[in-house]
Length: 288
Image 1 (cartoon, helix red, strand yellow):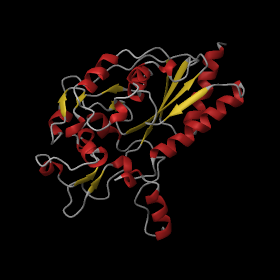
Image 2 (image 1 turned 135 degrees about the vertical axis):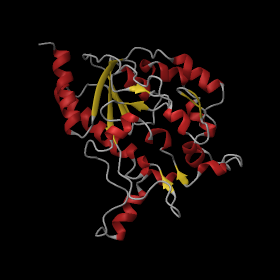
Image 3 (image 1 turned 90 degrees about the horizontal axis):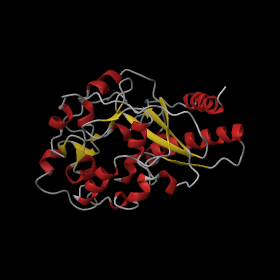
Image 4 (image 1 turned 180 degrees about the vertical axis):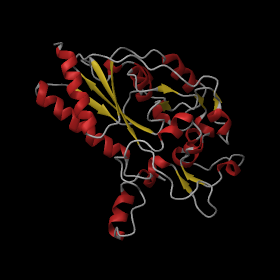
């Protein structure tokens, strides 16, 4: 049997056991849509996110990150959590669902590290690998698209037909040949729900986000004052935004899906105050 296929099957089984909902594998070939990233940066749509403007060429060529890379394992974890209060409840501020649990960078990084350790038990300690969760010079969303996990929606988020768009993504660059998945096909069709839903009109075209108008950017990334003309449009949002995801058909279908691996931010009443403080200290919202 093809050794590449056997190793792929072993990796997929272990990733599933570690709690990942989606696993896909793609080659280490340069990314095909580099022109879009260059255009996005040139138009200033990154705002103050200077890190998105650095190492652009490196982001497009995985071999610049790991010279001996042969395959890229892309993993997804669904983070949807049912709300305890409506998003528009009077007297409540809305925090994006991704921040209701422990910091996903830590949660996923630990799992990716464990998966690499597992691969080394099979292939030997000389295996070269690097893994990233939203922190390295790679484009996880496009790699996920190429690895068959989903397609980039008109709201720029990756969408999977079974799991929806509430996804944390991580990637492992590996110096081993594997059997690769086919890229996912898009299924948005003529739907424009996400474009219409955005209150600040941050989605200036299908698949094009002007971050400077995005509520998530304004409440998380922006270090200065929120522009006055945008302030009334933020509503009750104080950290992040889920509006362009909430109306998606695929996301709606996934709301009752897989049991979540990321612990909820709001614990049951019997959890003591000290534990709550510890959970809060490791949550993404501490960046605010």
